[in-house]
Image 1 (cartoon, one colour):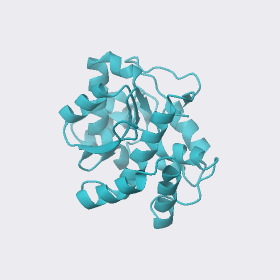
Image 2 (image 1 turned 90 degrees about the horizontal axis):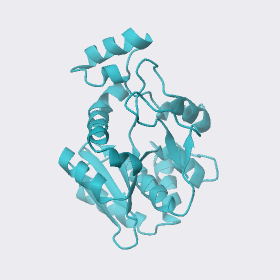
Image 3 (image 1 turned 30 degrees about the horizontal axis):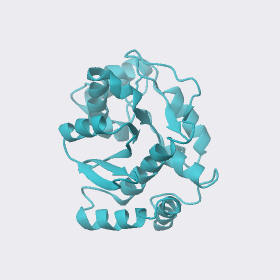
Length: 235
């Protein structure tokens, strides 16, 4: 089974696969590129919300993830838009929808990734078989587990970024080459350094999930009103 990790980036999406037959990276710049890729792989770990609440501001999986990461790293987890706000044409209107149902406003961070959530949500609705191969995950949880349950440095520091890359390199030696090549090939306003290491963590988890049990927060995920499971997956 072909596996990959996908993370959002300014250019669109960054894909990395550590599959032994064809390890590679790719920047997916269009919705068509993303859809092609989702169909091309058998299992994908992705750092993007799948499944949305209708009236509750925070999904259970996000609440559990914040607790697992701890207070210092909880800020890396933010609540996605509720479904009524997903197709709002502007941040102001999305805020109004969010406040009407939850009495809380949508964060700027959540609004910035809403277009990507919208695209992914449409693909999952139009092609239900994608639901069996696409797993929402979170890189910081994956890094925590790779490091024995501890995160030493935040990834917005050079030490934190290097630490995360080293964790991947312990298993995938090619990770250092990928990191250097992607930095050389793409500008910072297309792909950030943390996008690279995050997609690597997702790719490694997807690959290792073929031999290990996929776990989730919560253990028995609820489904949203569209039938999508709301869970953060890890191994």
